[in-house]
Image (tube, rainbow, N blue to C red; front, side, top):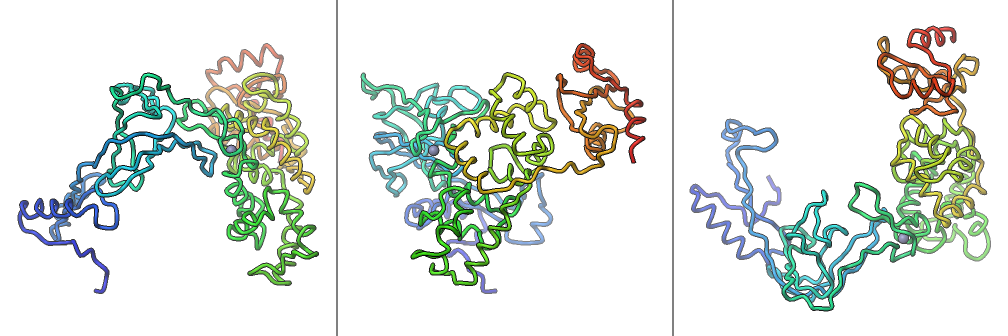
Length: 449
Ligand SMILES: [Zn+2]
């Protein structure tokens, strides 16, 4: 039918034939011009395929026969740290060039800090706990992957003066703190926009459809502007016209741009100077803060000033501001730490200040009726609700202008206590907070609308 097929595909009627062809392809593996990790045997009759059928996820009429991984021993000359687009610090082994399965290998991945130490993701020993050090003899293997890996280390050849590898605590690109969150294998640069390794991806997110969504400023344009140094951080987008609208270097003179498209872009940028708080928070690209979390935060803090003041005064894991942030329904410790960490970095804080100076951030208007008896009140639900689900109760309360919190504090106005309410009820009692049963609550909100 004119499809391109692999010239090494053959039909065989015996197991010996299949194995023979497997050996043949294995012997040619290094010269194929592409990486493979084995062959696949398939029944080439559609009726028989239908009769053989499927297991839960795999067909019974096809099976992979993998080649053994190819390995070689060589010297580990250095461990470099690369910084990815999300700020992830990835260790790369620089090797004395060695041939592995016909391919010369001089780099291999070392995955992460724990892998170098000889630990798996759960903290259990791998390689019987042997760590990997610069100067070591290491076993390199390729198993169909494009990037070779290090499997083992020969510590009998280790020099007496060798030292354990110290994983960097700072980003090698921008010098910001590198932080490894609890439960994660990866350390990340906290430099955000000030880190050249992260800048481009963050700018792409900033202009994406659910963030600032600027007409005519897509991924391609951002890449070109960043490459030429016209844009290095979000605030630069809003000074583009002032810098490149007139004068010698003008946007309309750039390749791909003209008078008309340039002025259209400037107009689109102007139109976005006014932005709702929820979109603004989402556009910052804070880790763990997605679109719906950004809306939650915006509705809770209402204004940029309110949000900013609260986060600036918050210390991670302690104090009133932390408890308030952590207590917002749908936030939690991981997101709260991430938000505080974002604003804790001086360079990021300054970047945000420059951006805010260019904008008019619209306070989040509560989406509800302001004359409801619970408008503006902070409400906590606890215990088992019997007439409505917890999610439904929260949604209903929010639609009436209430703020939902996950924990009881002095700022709580109402605790709705369902059956089997426990510690939150006790705390609310001790703080003298209004406590309603589910029936009381339903009667209260029935009064509105
Ligand atoms: Zn960095």
